[in-house]
Image (cartoon, rainbow, N blue to C red; front, top):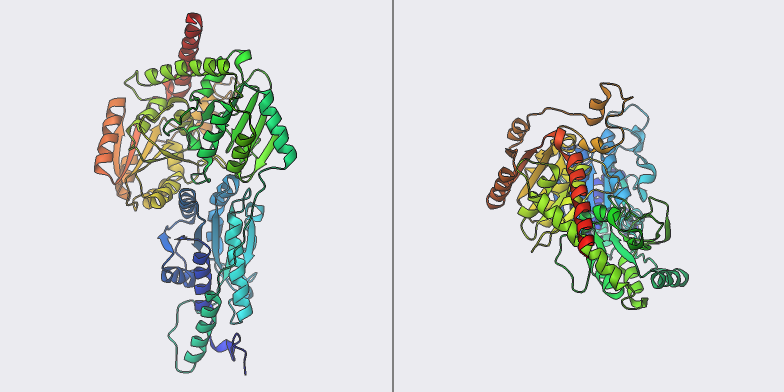
Length: 605
């Protein structure tokens, strides 16, 4: 007699349907809730299984490249691993940009690629490529499930492998993508049971039910806050540096109670806090007993040498504008949930993993109010002077410039909205010109892993789908064109979604580089760098079924933003600036006005 976990005449029954059910139920048992699917034949059994698992939410995105970024948005906003599922062949290669971002930013992403059976490999079979380890070292792990089998031991083994794969996406200090390759041999479609094989199929389903009835394995990882030597050294650094700041770089939307830990350390030490817009700590109500610096990218260069911090405690991802500007070398300590954050190669101690726990441990060990109070107040007074200049100057104009677009958008957002920032000028404009959002608590999402311009529209749609709150995206015209097809994904959003495009005639971030206007630059080279394109966005939006608005003044932009939040739906706003008088001159004018304000305040003092 055959054992309960082994079938007689296995070839008579295809195990694919039950194998696919085992895969999807295990992913759900392990905490996955969202599966983004793209069309294809080889992945059909797994799509069917995902639809049959009540805990999974399938999302349909035609293009795998957009699907990858949509899944990143889901993962960023929910804190859970999101899965993407594609057919075999070149389809999986289109996930690569999203995998790169997930790897660089530490975002939990599960790539599920359906694959042809082994006998079709290296035979010129259609839609068949070598998918094994296609992402190389960009993924935390690669799992080859092999061909579906009847054996109970194989079913148990693949369930454990899948549970470990999900855990690997969340490992402290090493969060990121994992690739699971799922083989499938025809027939791919579910087949009705015939009289001859019905009993065998029922028996296979019973075996799978038994495997699924066992609790999914749990793979727990813990990250040490620090060893005693590092903790002692950091405590001594704090004692030695009463003039220090806590600088908060980009953070994922869900990274434990990082905000609470930063505020706890700031209250304990008295150190001022500079929070980037992308840190999730900029647009929040002021915390009691905490000194905030909102203008550090401009303020840093205006501090006297004696006022510059001697210690920088950097929390989160790499700073958009680099470390706080200092004329003398400062000691640097970094705290991050993911990877080594030290692009300047200057950190004395690097804490990886549980950043919130490390900050709280430091707060517990730190002498209370170690800060130089006179220094703190002097720096805060200069920060207020620069902030007043920024808030007045950004509002002092009729024609649109990048800073005015950013300020108008932040000012118009509902109190609990989510703001997604594109890279290049978009994030920098918010960073420089949007210092506060009074009476609001805005969630801010950025794509600062690889800092690319890929997939911003798709990622925003994923964030909106996960959060279910009013969501806005600010990006440049080149970034939009790079992901224009994802308007098809955005239009499916059921929550209010706003896409604000800074239309400045190409990649104007390059205007701020030394290359701009270089005498040895060939005449046609600059257009190849900036890539200006004249595209009728109104016609494109009409084709996608997305509402379109074009504005050229601050007043018109504010009016459109107000109307959108009343009307809801999906709207793309093309905010047109004059490339000849925009970002570079705007920033220079603000810096000059800020310097004058600081000098004037010093003279009065």
